[in-house]
Amino acid sequence: MECRLCGGEASELILSGRKHGDCPECGYLGVDESLFPEPDAERRRYTLHNNDPGEPGYRAYLGTFIDAALKPFLPGGARILDFGSGPVPALGAILGRQGYRVRSWDPFFSPESRWEEEEWDAVILHEVAEHLHRPAQTFRKIASHIAPDGIIALRTRFRPGTRAELESWWYRSDMTHVGFYSPRSFAVLAARIGFSLALCAAPDMAVLKQYRACAPVRAEL
Image (cartoon, rainbow, N blue to C red; front, side, top):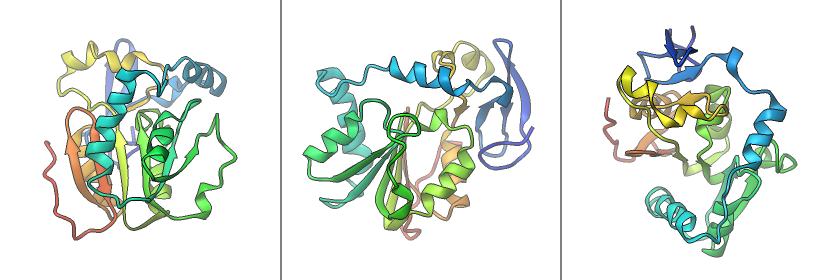
C-alpha cells in the first residue's frame, strides 16, 4: 500500500475489521480507499456537526487554536483562508471580528470561492486534515498559494502509538475521518513541501511555516 501523505510503502493494518495503511516513514495512518464515504453520505454527516460560534464552550475551543496556532505567527489584518469551513464557518466569523481578512472555502458548502487565484498569509485546516482523501496533493496545492512568511495551521487529533490504543480510539468512529497523523507526519510533510515545522503541540495542533529560516521544532517521533 502506498502512503497517501509521503508516498512511502505502508503496512497493512486491520482495525475493527477495516483495512488501513500504516506508514513507518511518516506515521500517517490511512483508511483504505475502498472505505471512503460517498459524497452524499459525507455531506450529510457534515450537516450534523454542531459548530455554533455562540456556544461558549465551542468558542473557547476555537480560541485555544487562534491563540496558539495563529496569533504568534500572523500580523493584524492578515489574509486567511478557512479551508474546509463546513456549513457554519464559525472560526472565520470569530477571526473576522478580530480584524483578520478571512475567506471561507468548502467543497460542499462554499465551493464557489476562487481561493486558488490569490496568495494567503495563512491557510487554516481546523478539524479538516483527517477528512482529506488525497492529503499530499491537497497540501502541495495549498503550499503553492502561501505568501512569503505565511503558514499552514492545522488542528487534527494526533494518532495514538499502539495498536491497542488505535483499536479503541474514538476518533476513528467517524466514517468521514479517513487519515490520521502523528507529529512526525507533519515534520515529514513540512520538509516535502519546503516549509518548516514551527509548532507541534499535542494533542492536536501543528503549524507549517513557509519561511525556512524559522527555528525548527523537534517533533515527537
